[in-house]
Every structure is written in structure tokens, then in C-alpha cells.
Image (cartoon, rainbow, N blue to C red; front, side, top):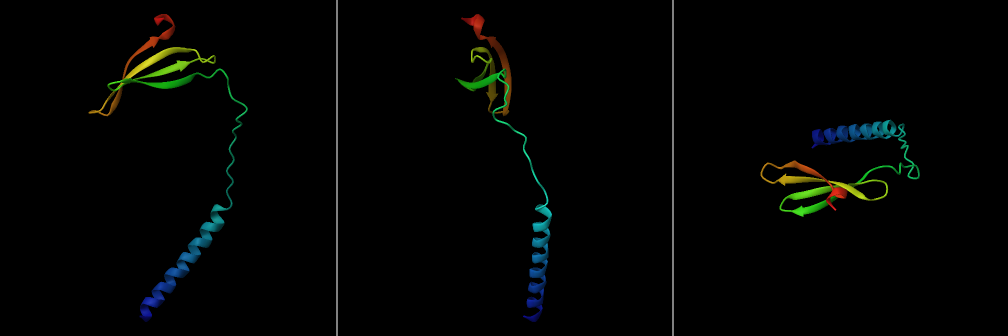
Length: 95
């Protein structure tokens, strides 16, 4: 048991040294995020996903007035696990 106690003591000392090193090393870094939620571009295009059934889905894109203009139709193949682009529709001319 004497050899086991010495080994456990060495492990405890090593863990204490590592903990002190990590404590002082990570405390010196400062992370800043330059994000202002009030400063956003109102001309961004918004997208919305719509389920069409049987593995098909569409992505509606709108302009700043939230008028949907285009829909891209995709198909998800479950066997190959990939998304296939089918076509793009102009919703204004479809009316």
C-alpha cells in the first residue's frame, strides 16, 4: 500500500498543477462580439421553407415588403440522403 499511496499523491499534485495552469491561462483572454441588433439591413431577402409532400419541399424567398416572389423546389432522396434541386418558380407570373 505504501507504493500506491505515493502514486496517488503524485497524481493529486499533478492534477493540482494542471488545474492552476488552466485557471491562469484561460483567464487572460477576452472575447468581444461586435453585434448590434438595432443595426440591421432592411433590404435583406427572407426565406421560408414549405413542405410539399412525398419528399418535396420548397423555399420561398421574399423581398423587404414580405411579398413572396420566388419558390425553389427541391426533392430529398432518402436512399441516397441527398437534396436535389428541381426547378425555380416565379410566383408573380403564376397568378
